[in-house]
Image (cartoon, rainbow, N blue to C red; front, side):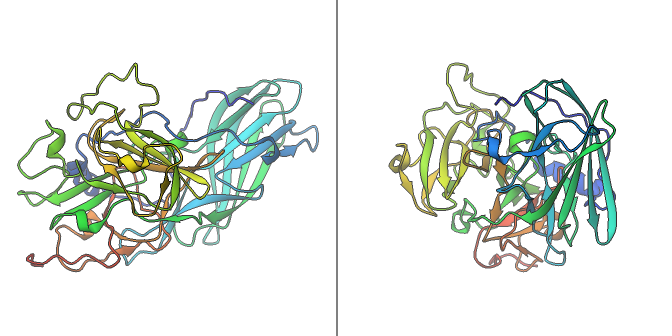
Length: 416
């Protein structure tokens, strides 16, 4: 079974219930995110669904003969969303959903998909979102639709306010058929939880981690790009050391920060000799280096999912774990954050996908987060949201500050 290449065609804005950052918020985020465009190849375990995961439709002459499979999911009746922390402790948790609907042409004639309509109920109100999506599916071929986004944009991800809906219906409309193929799924929060891959003890006074799930669509839609920030001499959060520019990797606060295993696991892939990109915005030619999109990286299987830890410094990976099959414990040192592979600047990229399936939300059992506007400088206090089995919020260019400790941060020597 082959999943054909496809293109997304989206023409509608997110509905009014979505989180809406102001223009000033976006400008504030742009100051901290200047030059951050860390996209890379789809370096992850992401394969089409198994044949037995398709639900068959051939009810009448009003709908075509197709098989349907939805992801992320572990069964035929539900789909996982990412349970997301509020931007601060005054706000409730929310949800994000990037759904994949695979459709297989089980008939003998070519099919032409014309649009997909999603329906759900939010706080007692019926919601509908229509996606014009033109696709041609030959007999016995499989293709897919996904609501997605470009990097650092809002796009067509579903952003659910609390309470998150419990059900969603997808309707697929094909040319020459009067009816729609109707797919109903229960919405469930993803329930596999991880530690953050960094530790508070490695941060200097006044530093915080920073980042969120605003990656590209497709197989990386729930991925994280992370950096370290501190308040610079101008009183603004900045990813670089105060008084430096973007000309050197080492000017970035994250460069050289330790990275740790999020859970117990087994190494499935490692690369430790990919040349570092010489500086932000300039990439080393990797044409003759296979599987180097993630640069110096580990792929580690954690209880049925594969985690990719990408873009670390050349030669910095823990030699104890370079061999395939090495056993890793939660909290083990993996390597140093860097700028290798298909990366435009120093950062840490991490995402997970289920073994033999597609990407999954990355949900954390520890740490705290808060929006920048609620925490303009590193002082004691702040309305920090607790990451208790929740993912990090993200909305376009808007990202939270992150504290990976067991308790809220306390900074000594800094006044309120």
